[in-house]
Amino acid sequence: MNTTMKNILKSSLLLLCGMGLFIACSDDNDSNPTLQQPSTFPLNEPAYAAQIVDLQNSDEMRLTWSQPEYGFPAEVSYDIQASLSGNFTISTDEANADESGSLIPDYAVVASGCNGGAGTIDPSVLDRNLVQIGQWTQDNIPATQSVFIRAIATTAGAEPIISNVITVNVAPYYVALKDAAPELWYLVGECVGDGSWNNSAGGIGSAIFPLMTLAGESYDKVTGQGVISYTGYFPGGKGFKLIKTPGDWNEQWGAGDAGYVKNDGGSGNITVPSDGYYTVMLDTKNDVLTIEPFVGASGRVFSSMGMPGGYNGWDVNANLMNAYDTYDGCENHAWSATFEPGEDGEMKFAADGGWDFNWGNDAFPWGEGKQNGANIPYVAGSYTVFLNDMTGQYMYIEN
Image (cartoon, rainbow, N blue to C red; front, side):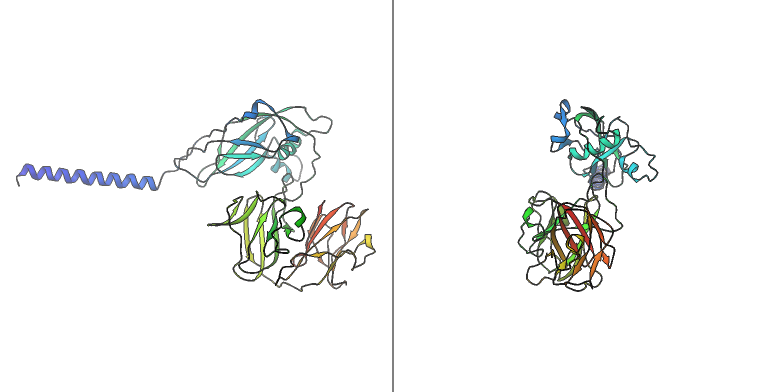
């Protein structure tokens, strides 16, 4: 081979090697993209922006947006914020947490944890926040009001990204700013209650049972979101789910390929690996569900549970509660009853027709009863009452 041919061959080999390195680098960049930090992203103006949204008679306010340009498809969570002035400096959450009461909010987070390219605002949540921000009274509620709305995008490894601001006109209504009741979710399945999977309102206390509040936890004053739980006996391999609204499967927690999933109609039933006591804990603010074996003694299984109080002469055998877990092989620690006192008073829970095992606390309408604790002060009304004798958790839900 002459010198010229050798040089041509060497040049060709070098060119091929260079192309291989270029392709390898290109492949590497494709599989390990660089995270970009965009400055904003587009929040679309909805069709109803040209109208006046009646907050009292509207079901939802849907918003759409395009994902920020991170340089690759990223898992993004979105919050939606609303303001009366267009300023976003002090939130209602910050003002509510300020014990001095000196902070005046100018915006509120009205929807959180949205995924994908869309989210919805609950008009009642928006209205409550506007009443607080505007410091409106029943006599000075405006007929119409312009509201400034934006979205915030967050993803791992990047700073939060703020969208453009859109304006929506609403017709607000006055609502007294008392704290919202805790957001509830209910257990239903073949191993809870009577095992019938009856998720209707008629199944409350027999087929579905609420997760209840926890002592020491705080609950959002506007949304009622926070950590709720249920502790009880679960047989291994028997399925159950969580639903938010009795009679409605649209909002549910089930089992998916990667763990527990929310609002997936195709999700499977949740099961525990073996018979035993477990604590089901749900953080409704951050959408986190955990199910862990209960650590501690389950305690005695009672045959009856009374509700003695001033309304029935403190009779431990009057107005007995219904046992919740009644499926074969269960060990029941959950109870429910209808309670309709005609006037305010006090009461307790007492097991097996005596006072040896009784629960009380000075908190109403929910709390954690203690053995030989204080009388529970109730308010006249109509309630469905729930009790867990393992944990002492109780709740009075207005009918």
